[in-house]
Length: 306
Image 1 (cartoon, rainbow, N blue to C red):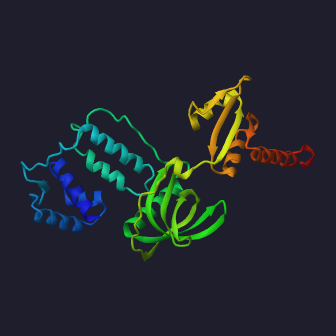
Image 2 (image 1 turned 30 degrees about the vertical axis):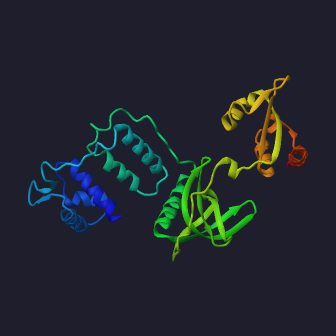
Image 3 (image 1 turned 90 degrees about the vertical axis):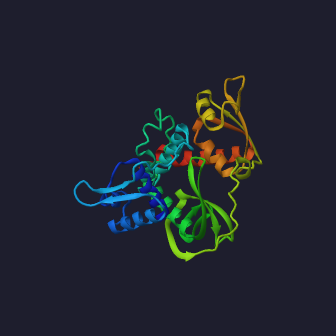
């Protein structure tokens, strides 16, 4: 964190003609004494920092000192800022905002054009996600074990995990870590985690390769699906699977074919279409949906309402 702050202070001094210790202390959320020590460290590193007392005084870089920024193009800087904004949308702290200020300060002539990419990773769950993400980020940096309660289709359980990666994929946030309870690497969905807590226990890093999250690896298929959808559901099939996932049948309905991995997830997905879908294969899924519809019709019979 100190190195990041020193770089940030240097960036401010390069972009602004003059600043003060109180202004730097407020910007980086530290004390004036810490800023004074940081200025001393910059001087020891050979950066010509000048300080002046009294009215009109402050902290500045000696005239003529410059750092070359041309290693990054304007487009490079725009892409960096777009990435930082996307992370800031789910951040529980001011870190990314401060980082963007460091990059943007005095760079208007360097960053040309308007923003062309806007990424918002937040969701309806931002208020609950941001604290989890911040806690897990800190635990990864500190190499601290985390604990939480996990809600899975198989039931609820208390987990103790060595965290390695925070992952955003399939429109959701996940944690990849070594589960002490299952003795293996696992992928945990943050929305199913509750009571996330960073412990004081330090763990020794394992050889944790970046997980293979390709669709073929996570969703290997195996269940052959053949379904007919009503024509007015074309928009949703295109949105979820692309325009080549179906063919139009003689009666105008859309014949959808795919390989699915999990029967329960398949049925849950099909049920969201209500009476706009007819399952042809697999037979098991067709029978289960028929049984579910029968039970639902019993629940919603008019004469049961009191």
